[in-house]
Image (cartoon, rainbow, N blue to C red):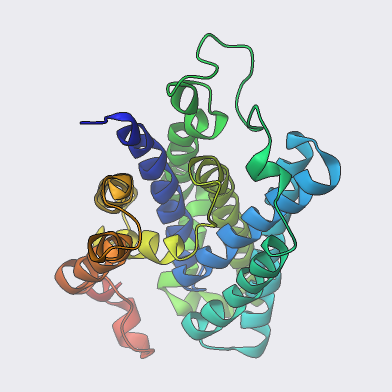
Length: 295
């Protein structure tokens, strides 16, 4: 048996876990975790554009972070200004970077995907050219546990995280200072977008031939199944990561290959059916949203 494809499991797991953390921030900003898909695709687009135009991976990282945060701020401002449904609005706005990424990728081979040695890895190590390079020389994977720990700490242990959760869970508080509430919600969405940047970097390295469409929705299902807890969402992310890791063992284009391509999304649906009871927000009535059993 060829064990090489299994090397990608930590990469897949870290990427989906980071996106799940971002989805939690978007949900607690009351803008719907669906928006994390647009953040990730904006980060991917920033990586590709930044590296294509500059040839510098550092500039590409800055462009990715800027693209993800720009999507979060613009999308959040639009949703709040027009009082649109956050789920529908986030989904529709996420189509904009998705279409832009498709059009850009059709223009020709991207340098970020085809250069050798691959950009984005730590060079000059003894692991260069080996399968261990993707694990031990990948900055995205190295910082993933630190980023996840930071995301959980800010949300759960800081006054800012308390305000973010309070404004989203108790709408009555918004009447005490609408301007401050808008700032907290937009900044929460922007932080969620930042957690998607290392996820985009990991996925671009793990799958240079294909853009990671739809993984934001899989990560959102993991967050819902984990009842918006960071540790449960991270553990739930291992399931789709395993299914994505074993895809090379089945020939592409066959019935088994197509089924395995769809398997992470089927598992996400299974998560929602089995674990989402009382994890999703209830209707907009004030009483139900103050009830902790339906948050």
